[in-house]
Image (cartoon, rainbow, N blue to C red):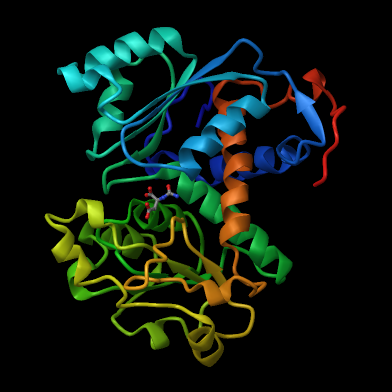
Length: 335
Ligand code: NCD
């Protein structure tokens, strides 16, 4: 694909070579993400960071990624603090905000809303999560993490065995990740969820068409027994009609050190898009895993900065100029 000026709305827009290009640029961002060097390559550029749903990692890492490339960030969070609360349409908001920004990241509770917004925008738009639909930058950072973690174990994405656990019906990160895995060979996916929260049929169909070996299970112990990656997710309570309805499913599939030791192969990598729900009745990924070296969740979150820097650099066509506008940092860096 041509990255310059492109919207990033769905994983479906990528081919395998595009993913390789993103990962190659992400690798080159490491000295900047670690603040060993600073670059001004995006000096003067403005990111409009618009998050109409709760977000910590995605919002802050998109903002940090832009700052680390030398750009400025303007942020709107929540409908209450935006003119959408006064009845303004997505079209008008897009027309106006794209005049103030060079690229926009947007998260919104409705499926398809970010694509609608992008149609009216005069600048590239990145989907930071549209309802239960997609979260493409998360899938990219997830796969980037999988690639790195497997490389340390002498493996590659082709041949991957992964279990996805939890709310697979509403989890946009797993929807995007499954679509992304369709670009790879000999992939085995085990889907562990309550029957009512199963992976949507359309995603299953894409995977089967791509030749992915898909196993559907309601048994955590069995599902995590022979995989390279165990990818846990949160019950997406905000997508249920009521909290009570969501509560029925909270805590059904919990991964902790004892379960890990008993059922997982040694060195199985544990991932989660975060936030993990650490309340006692949910606790899908127990704190007793925190010292397990195979718990990759914080490396995964760190990788978000690299991948998001790569997306900005490619979309704004500066991927090859980052070093030219760089210098070493002058301040103490304890990393
Ligand atoms: C996810 C999301 O918002 O879809 N979080 C994230 O962006 N890292 C997952 C979640 O909220 O459970």
